[in-house]
Amino acid sequence: MATFFQSVRQGFGRGGNNKSNNPPKSPAQSSTPQHQATMSNSPSISSSLSVETQANDPEGPKYFFQEKYAPLNVRGNFLTLCACPKNVELGEWLAHQIVEQYRLLHGMLQVIQEVNSVTGLPICNENTCPTMSAGRLTYTWLVDGRAAKISAPKFINRVEKWIVSKIHDPVMFPTEKVNGTPETSAIKEANGASTTPSDPANPDDWIGKSSGFPPTFYKDCQGIMKQMFRCYAHLYHAHWLNPFWHINKHDVLNMCFVHFVTVSKYYGLVSDKEMEPMQPLIELFIKQQRVPPEALNGGHWAQQAAT
Image (cartoon, rainbow, N blue to C red; front, side):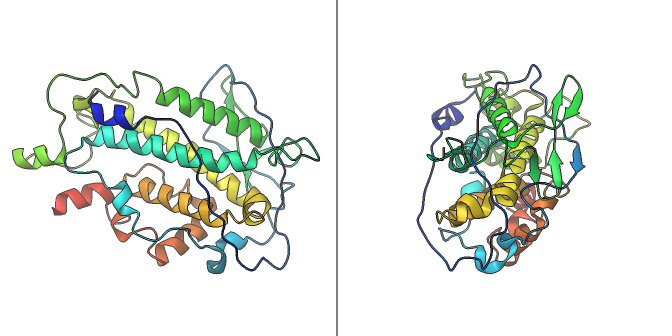
């Protein structure tokens, strides 16, 4: 692959901010720490959902769905961070976006993996989060071809290992230089070629082809982003109050999530149905134009067609 993605695939860190607000009047949901689990035999992840009542009080008030509890720690338009430059091939840019989104999510997941010095357990643990829940939804992991309920810490640990394995897979995320010139939007415009998404009916063309990405690359990106969304949904529904509100990190969480939603919608990486557990907050961010209108009206391909 060309050198652009190779230059941005780097270590994963975490950000921070320390900003406070008036606290909610009563606790909504609480949680506590995490133990890491080993990878299952199958890296596949189930897309099925089930419904059940969770210990983290799925019926409790969702403060994070209210505007006064939805600040960000940054200003600006996230479109400037997610729009693909005209001189960068789209496959390379999506690879960069996947790596960056995982870096941000990993930083937020580290917050709930902090160990409580009193209990000796992380904030998200087997007792507080016996299943990978988002309100009344429970995400399941595919084990030996069957959907299985596992604890949130195990689910998150497996998702992180799975994502890292994908990012470092030289087939899915190649870093070797390829012969020829990657087809950037600037080159396509100069040649009068279409800038619309790859045509499923044309198996000989796909996003990232000219940079050495496999035919399944875009679909794989969708799968990775879907699992990252599920982690965000759990962070909000199970851990917004403890620890994010209590340590004044809720605005950092909001910033990471808005960035994630903008990228997801701009490139069609996560379906609206998948985003339903967080829809009230997403609608709030859309109303505030935190998620820019350009991400909602055809996204990348509409913008390319208009230029």
